Length: 402
Image (cartoon, rainbow, N blue to C red):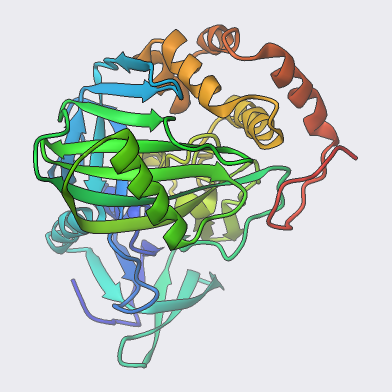
């Protein structure tokens, strides 16, 4: 259903057409909920095409949008030593935003109580019937949408008060090589054979799409992003000196920044207004992964018996957030060596268990076993320090205990 009908009251209005907005609109529609999805029109507010990755067993809900998947994962230490593992029954998957958008739009178009509206959302607030979304159409006309509940997935303008804030920032090339250079069955999650920054850590990331095609990224966990020129220089070094790809063409590029923080993200901003996705804290603080969490949260919202009455469920458990807070602080202070930490983690923990741990699906006993393999002294010191740190919204980490 299309068209700016202003006098209707939807069961739900979903603001934002990224992974969180698209996924929630899909799951709500599948449950029989009347949904209006508000997406930004073409222009500066509409993001460029993006890649999302996650792991999942079996055939997923968005399999038609998966462009590639891998049954083996690999991590390489700074010395080049490789740790390769099979996380079955899980597979690592890549979804492209344009394919996901087309898939969800086609499903919404087939649902009589769903519609997609292209408009710029300016204000979301409570109203007697639930909540309203005030927008402007591409033609410049005001538009007010009404819903019994509104889910807002738009990015936040800043990070909520926090003790630690690192950025996962990256630039990637989709490359095509003149000769076969990749193994399509193996995804390189972390390749630490790159120059390490003075603060934080850096790694290469290689997702083969064919023997002669791959997404190759340079990624850092640090306090500030680089210039595009600096990312390009790092990618040239990685593809030339480390991967030795020979002649290749860059078919497209993508670049991004993901906050990694122990900030507390409010999920409710009004009586009938909720934040979802990264804006609601769905990004896993210690890894930057978001897509799988969005799916779990969206399914939970869609299947709630009294949707919205009890709020949006937390995206991560308290134990997971507490462990992530310790790790982020330990990395930020330099108490643990990032490349060694992650390489050892993949070497010592079975891949399927580790991925479940990173998704928040591990048991306390499994987490205890994983914890025995980390640098215990630095982590305990960091855990003892955290309660004395001040949460602040300065855009950087707390410097020292107070």
